[in-house]
Length: 128
Length: 478
Image 1 (tube, chains in turn green, red):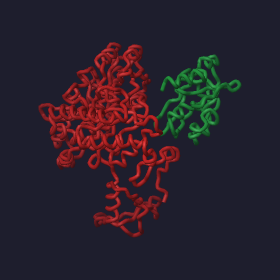
Image 2 (cartoon, helix red, strand yellow):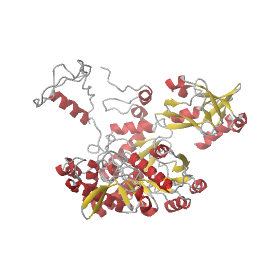
Image 3 (cartoon, one colour):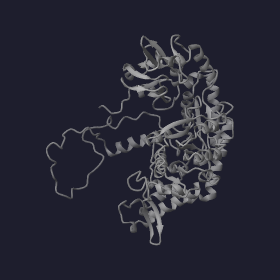
Image 4 (cartoon, chains in turn blue, red):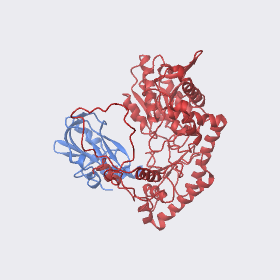
């Protein structure tokens, strides 16, 4: 399993990274591996606001459809539209090109509650 | 099964050929107005013989319960007795019009009435509506009935529906369509609803719980009485997903267990053909309290005979006219042919067959939860220590003459392989399937490539599902 050392993680297998004033969000390598071939992404829209833990969209693979949960509250600033046309990028480059959204956090301190790469690695091993 | 690729009917088209002769015109010919006619219609032109061959070939490519063992978990692919078809073809039933006066279709209404009565008795309910056209449709009707009940009491605080993580995906969908929020409940290690998690969620905002029993792991809910009582104590209702009723007939009744509303899958439990997506029929049964809210019209009987009535606070119609009538005839025939003892025997044999097959398959494909199962069981379909995944196993089964089981469901089991043999299969068939599974487990170690490349005998080989989903081609572009 690949990890991005700069990112923080959730139990639902999403990652978040700080990027200047904004936060950037995607699904983890473990998530894409479990989902297998991803075929569809329904992202939120720019300007949408979410509370911590809200479902912000849907990702579908040949195996299953899963909700995307945002572990922080905030407002969507940017959506990676390229992923909608080429969802397979989430399989090939989950931490890079396959970022899903960028958002402005209402409470940046919520970032500190997320799992470190080490804790997340442990968590995925225990889950299996 | 025919294993040659069949061209599209457009590809065998040749100008001027026709497979149909229109009868002589009996009315004056009228020209359609300008703008409503076309000179070029892209319709195939074939002779009657080519036409018959084309569709016969396609039918020979089908996998069906009449040709192969079809252990598709959660789908109850039991044999559909041919006497059902004979009954459905009776002219007095098949040639009536839904707008005929009730006095001229008393037999048709009697059949509906008696089917309602039979379903009430089988599942332990006070009233039944035959309206919904399929399982998920019945589920949606059920949730709308729960909503109508709470609203009729002015109980508007209730917004959350509890749904176990093993549930069919249609449960949360029906809930969302009814305007409610889904709260997922975890399962415990024996595959039951986690009672502690359930109790924590129980308050006066609970609409109810959607319970599938036996659940999608093929396991009977061991705390069903306590689960129902807990929900009732906080003012919620229990929705029963009747998908797995085939395990229970004549043994226990959902209504007696505390379930308030349940949908039946006539096409599954009561043996009507349903491979290929229909037609289904998903009647709902309810307790006395919920009877006024049933969708209608439903069949009733008084001194003058049979008639159709709408329950007083009905949620309304779920479908045009009276439901999928052709399915009623088949299900009614099945119930009458089997009788109470026959239905019980069917359920017992369904459970016995599943447990026998589980015992033979589990050494190679371990079950998710080691318990006596009901009518189906769930194994892990991957082969540890190899790179063989469930999909490879499923595709290889096609080569060996079997329809693959349901795969990758339920979601709470990794690499799930969900096997439901049903009661209508012989021990010899189950043994042959077990032998095939054993062979596949061996091939996974000795010749994995044969599994990766499967299926080998079909007109097309392994399909690229990801590409098909990402870039679907939905129309013929000739």
